[in-house]
Amino acid sequence: MKKRTIGATGLRGSQVGLGCNNFGWTIDEARSQAVVDAAIDLGVDFFDVADAYGEPRGRSEEILGKALGRDARTLSSSSSSAFPPMPRSATGTLRAAT
Image 1 (cartoon, one colour):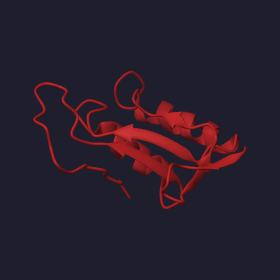
Image 2 (cartoon, helix red, strand yellow; image 1 turned 90 degrees about the vertical axis):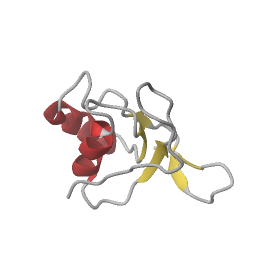
Image 3 (cartoon, rainbow, N blue to C red; image 1 turned 135 degrees about the horizontal axis):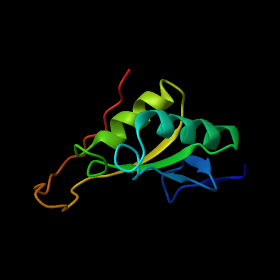
């Protein structure tokens, strides 16, 4: 998998990323783990997640944290999502279940 620099951050991630918005919403934890494993096997190391994804809100971050464990990966997490009834927040809530 080709790598590229992400904006002006200096961080490098796979050219293809995995959007994790379905984790904990339309697919359960076991199937989410299988998706993450398959992506890693293909060379993906860039994962996009947000504090508003999953049920309850933020569940996708917990599932992704558990799926990745302590492996070094590049994460993009949105915060301040305006999904009702969630109030706008100044900080993100990336959680890693270990």
